[in-house]
Image (cartoon, rainbow, N blue to C red; front, top):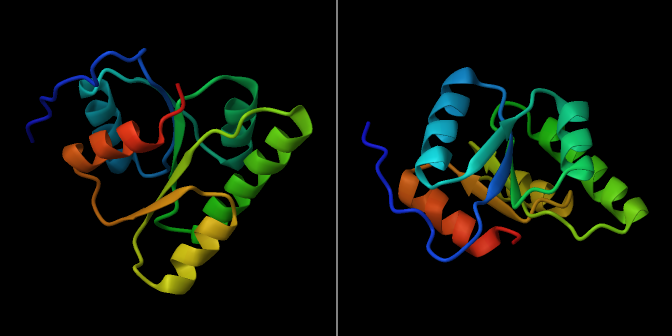
Length: 136
């Protein structure tokens, strides 16, 4: 797997919070994000993701919704609720899902996830997501 990429030009180094349970997906995503000059913080579990997203500054959150979409929606709702109480600017949340089903996608979006990516995450699509959604 070739993970050479051109860093995103003329921007500060993005900080990405990665809440990905599967070690294989996490390893690949971390390598890809590093190739895009991102600083990556990986957490495990809903509470760790919520605490990190709300207590630190991230350009975006990459949230694993592949195995349990309900866990992704729960995490996103908690992040959004806590952001509201702390008057923080919302961090973009990208949900990674397996299903193309409209009900699954809509449920994720309704929970506060900004974008749902279905299928394998390629380096080019990851770079495009960063450019589109990252918070400076």
